[in-house]
Image (cartoon, one colour):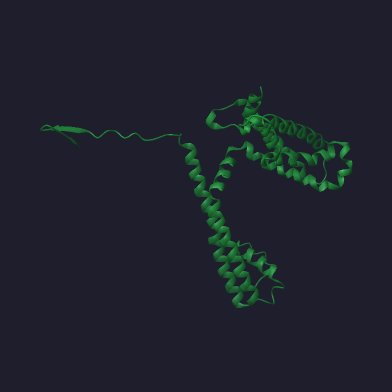
Length: 264
């Protein structure tokens, strides 16, 4: 019984075949996640939103308890170790943080904690739960893991250029910037080619630096896109190709001439 529950609540793996019950559960959870964060887009919460919040929190709490009860299947370990380990896993922490703020409005026992209403904003973390149910997002997550080294190199390059251009601009445009942070702010906006226009250079040297920074920004910002695109295509090809697939090579045709065999 517990093993079947685990198979249903865990994200369906396409390699294991389609499990209709697991797919239906995944769809239900995605719908609940999206609808449960919808009230955050409104300043006032109508009674319908409050009622749905109660239902959503009840379902999320049951989901959390079921995952905890089947933790031994998830980690592949028997005994109490798996049950002690689960609450400290990354997704379990996300689940718990997305549930706890809602308890402030559900249970009267938490009235004294209403000073911590800002914690209700943690319900946004429910978006992270979609990672568990979406195969597309799991692919993107795998791509980001595989591309972390080149992405780190690009971010290092961007950070270095921002600091360098900020130092140059802060030196040549001392009247335009009150402090170095404003220069860093300008360099970041210029590198990303956003340019809000609240801070801008007035000297020819400063404008020349701005032109170079904007051109460099086009090149640097394009690098992460190409890295992620290449990694995404590679991951898709890896998942599409059947495991162990190989191309069989046919034996070379042979001919018999004067007592010896030769390959064509």
